[in-house]
Length: 438
Image 1 (tube, rainbow, N blue to C red):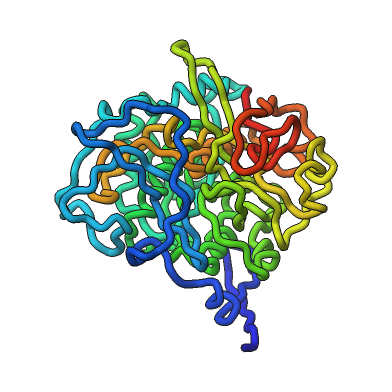
Image 2: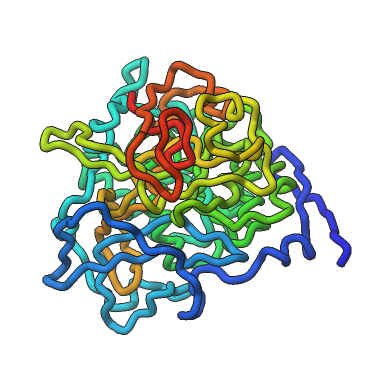
């Protein structure tokens, strides 16, 4: 079939979009898939954590089912009780508060990490250079699929729990101060349908980007679906509005992905994408050389809150791209040669806590697999907004040249653990250059 091209407006920019044949070839299943849908590998737990919910054994669930055609968000939640006959494969279009879901409390998420613990462990700043809140004057765009109707109130609940300054809901401008704005993939107020799994992902992304950079504005861009065409439109819009872009989803590599890299159109923006939660495996947009690919670690803290150990998470994504070429910055970095990618793009570039067994608190009132309230979340979906927000705290462009060439990031090079690749000294496909610790 002949490939057709069209043009569409994104903010003040006009970009090309592959239509019909190219996009239809990679569109299809998404959250809400039938029970035979491949949900991907289960998490590997590196400890016997006391995960109990309501005296029942806690379960671990992938937030969005994996698919060879549509993007899946790269997150797990720990401690779900499947009750009331709810489907474990998501619920699209139904207003979930009408259901009678099991409510999990904050106290039931034993061992989950708080924003203060993550900030303290990684020595992240608690003020900007001028003494303002970290991230002040910047905008972080969160790109996800479908709508989370409760994100404003859920973020408020999360902030109240941890004493984080609240974000008002407004249209972001240069003078508006930090606030939260929610738009469609083309920047309109005509929002997409609700999806249970993706609403859970949105909760993780927005709450943790705000936790690490409380002075930044959050622009939540909700694509119409999890297909590459819709998500690419959303990325294109983000490129015109934000200096920092967080993408906690992945799509199996496809021969047209290099064409889709054009949506990373801003040379002054910093793009971050989850490397995936399936071990030694790669996905787009993480494979794009215009993106910082964020992998996963297992983070164990001492009673005083310092890092007792940080190792490569067994399910953290990584590997060699089939289609993308490594930037000169990556190819010339110490350790790249031992990846054996032979000039191809290697992922991840960096890493942060992602193991659900050392996961973080998230609040979501929409309902997920028959449970609402507080969750313990993991996956590279957690690590990605943490990295995007930490970059926003710098106020500068954090791209491949900066990550591989700068002395401004103090990396903890992680040399224990593995995801199918060994966590070698220097660059590795387990955790990249390591975690940001300053």
